[in-house]
Amino acid sequence: MLSSKTIRNKIFSTKNTNKITRTMEMISISKMKKIKKKISNSIPYQIYSKNIINNLMSSSLEFKHLYLTNNKKINKICIIIISTDKGLCGSLNTNLFRKILIEIKKYKDSFINLIVMGKKGINFFKNYYSNFIIDSFNFSKFSFFDSSLKILKTVKYLYENKKIQKVFLASNKSKNSVIFKPKIFQLLPINNEFENKNFDRKFLWSYIYEPYNTVSLSILFKKYLESTIYCRILENLYCEHASRFFSMKHASENSENIIKNLKLTYNKCRQSNVTKELIEIVSGCSSIL
Amino acid sequence: MTFFLNVVSRAKHIFSKNVIKIYVTGLEGQLCIYSGHSQLLTVIKSDPLYILDHTKSENFFYLSEGILEVQPKFVTILSDIVISVSETSLEDVLKNNKKYKKIISSNIFYKNKI
Image (cartoon, rainbow over all chains, first blue to last red; front, side):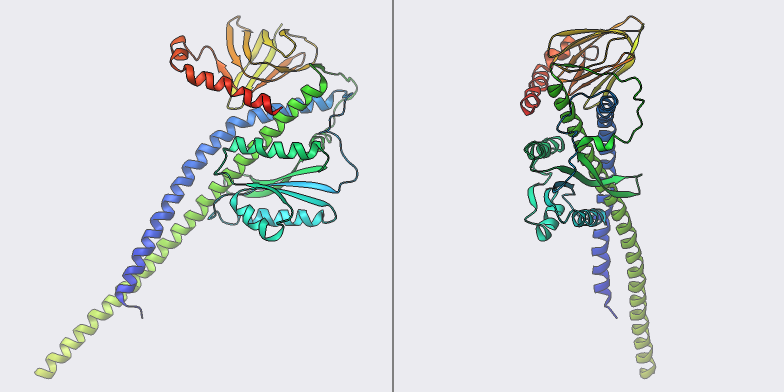
């Protein structure tokens, strides 16, 4: 049996851990609220840019932009991985990496490029696919919007020089504040997302482009891609904090249970010591008498 | 005759109302858009936006670079930064002169990226 001093120390350290987890829980809640506000503010821009592309697809496009052309044979792909910088967020990263590994296996015959964001992702993919990584950075160096611009710059360069034919974006998406699912979504070429919609092609019309169709479309697509990546980064961050909040909540509940059990053991130990001392006193007295 | 106008910035959904006409500056020059305008997709320059809404009240905004989509019944303006003139007073502008200059000059950053 443990000594009462050891148990007391254990209770003290568990209480300290409990304090830390409680604080982390609080921090996660406040950050979640902030990020949710940011997401709800940035979503209209993405939705309206998406709507413009939708309208563009329903018109008679005389000019096929590079971002809309689908290659039949795909042998060079790029996956943008948005992971987290910090741990303690449950199985959020593990589930995402598992899904990415399945995707990589699907394209095992093709040349794969990885752009990894977040320390956890960098550490994981450096171990397995270090030769696939073309760019990696963590969020501490750049702001979220700057990181989306940085990714886009790399992807644009690779895609326009035909070094990659398809770009995927892998990140976590929240179904609600409890369920998070890893999702891999095709970023480029763009039309895959929109082409399935049934447009009424009876009355085709066309846009007047100013200054030229190439310039207008490339700026529109650039804005759309920027906002999409930015929203995904924010959503992944929201998932991270929500997941951390739940894991910290569980951790603090568990620590409270441990403290309860340790206190019980401590009391038992103390009680047994008192009983032992009483017996000793009583037996000593009886021997004298 | 009115049409529906949406002005969206990166940070906010700024304006969403039925309007009579708008003045906005595109890359090729100033545009005056009424209801029933033919479909147009253009890049807009950093310049003021004038809106005459259905109650005939005038609204002024400062737009940074963005995209303008015109459909006969609705118009969408996507701009990186939108500053509402009604929300800012002359005193405020003079006071936060440096801040606004910084916001406007940050557009150059986007321009270089295109």
